[in-house]
Length: 86
Image 1: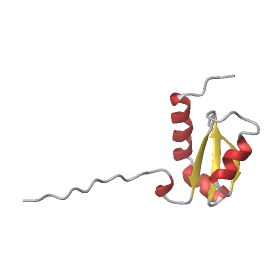
Image 2: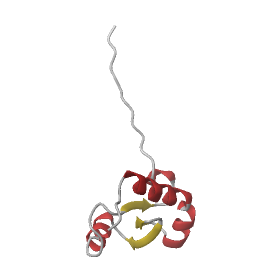
Image 3: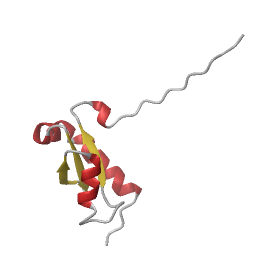
């Protein structure tokens, strides 16, 4: 079995980003399973996507990405609030 490490995950994620709008038009709001720069599954929930995919592929050898039509599906915002006393 071919190794599926950080490099492969990054390539699959980049593939997802590059084709994001196309995927949304084709699949709508869904959870896509991506492996080797191919969509290998489309599901209504992340949980179902994982449960169904591990029947065929070992866990950790694919990515699951939400496709919801906007950038919130592939971005995180982290902020830190600190209270300053004078």
